[in-house]
Amino acid sequence: MSTWDIKPQGVQGQLKVTGTHAGDLEKALTALLTDMSEAAKAAGTAVPGSAAETPLQGPTASGKPLTQKATGPVGAALAEYLNKRHPSLKEMAERIQAAVLGAAKATNEYVEGDLDAAKHAQDAAKSVRLDLLKDAGGRK
Image (cartoon, rainbow, N blue to C red; front, side, top):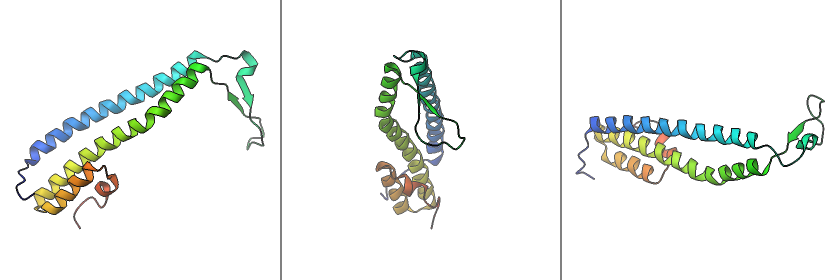
């Protein structure tokens, strides 16, 4: 690792570009969740009128009975899709965050002359160890 040749300004520029794209991805995922929620509501249910709401059992804080709206088959399918995709989407977000934090931390350590700490930051990013990358935020 003693042969590193990092150009901090170049890393900073790439991190800005990556941050912009990560922000765009976040907006797209938020729109996806909003659109799927609206689609599930618009799809309706497979049950008639009053059967579309089920009173929940037990006491409530307000003293008024609570009801749960029935979910139709399309809404249930969309919810199942999102439940199955959630781990992948979460992993994707964590990998992006680890890459950005790892690159920034490794570059900072490189600039400070601590190549061992830079390697540790790089290794933490590879293994998506956000706890190590967020820890302390600087040198010991």
